[in-house]
Length: 508
Image 1: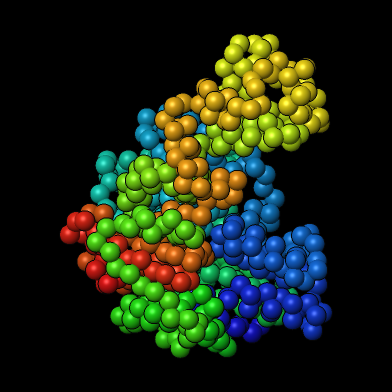
Image 2: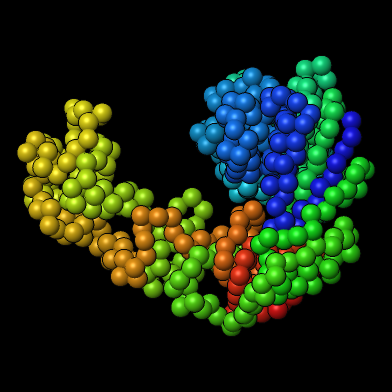
């Protein structure tokens, strides 16, 4: 088995390169598509690779059945079902039973590849498994932090969780990989080709799984970038990638970064000694870098924007300002306009302009029409209707109690929308934002932005007290984080200084 190690600096087309490898294996080496495993760190990365492979290589989704995450592969090979996976209700039940607040460590894994449990107990219990340590050993690590109740309380919680999961045949995401790694090698699926993406983010536990998966493969491709290893705090072991033996390839041309941003990013990352040195070039365009004392919201009138912060609290404050000025934006899986209200507005505007819509759309705006003044009471809930039918304004008036004049725009027709929310939407529309499309402004932590890009990036350099304290202990970790933030920008990088004395000053 030969290992190929591929280092892909930001914007160098790592996914494109890996898909060319897939194509070569299919066309030249006659490998069956189901004998190729493409294992990504996040659902988003796996889905993107699958979608592009299907589109570019003229196969269907079922052919590439092994384009998935490591967690997804473990789930399948252990023959688990959804009811076997621990959910919020399980942790709520245990919390009530123990009278201790516990959070679900599975949250955010599908999006970010790692979980973010809120409580210190689950952080230690799950963190120990990820690192291949006993709960006690991880508890005794000086970097773990203070734990109320000490080791006896932690052991009590850990034992209760184990007992609960065994009794109900339940797994959390980390348990799946633990049990996969316990399987005899004869039970491990055989692949001719294995591709591992974003390898710098894999934990000790995930690397052990990778070693099993590649054990019988003919060719292995391990791709990542140690400079973008920003999950060390969650157990990532980028040194496995950095020290791996095999044929090394460095993708040396960025199709994203212009010259100025490339130079600034390289200057920052070169301050790290323990890294794989990479020679790579930028686009020919110069690009633009601006440094501001405060956010320049007026700059965001046009174009697509990615607003990045190190910590979530900073985005909370920015959201308030964006709403005041009527900007339409996205943060995580939600937009700034309430989802139900958004659907109701779009549906009403479609109907009043003559479009036929389904029952779901009708119900969405009926919810916000005043009973008795815009729709008959007996039709308010739209019960006992044909779910397959499409409904026009005239049909709704004649058969379903609608009495609102179609000349009325949504803010006059949907009077049950709370006034502050309606006022905000009207401000968004006055700014001529297109609410029929995804927002052109996206807010994210730097950790949540990995893999993303935008023409314009606004990088907030504020550090929380906790992050600031960590920065002085582990500067290289923060350098990598802000390097990732900088390298999301395709044209313009706008760096915003902190209003406090806690900031990542190396960004300037």
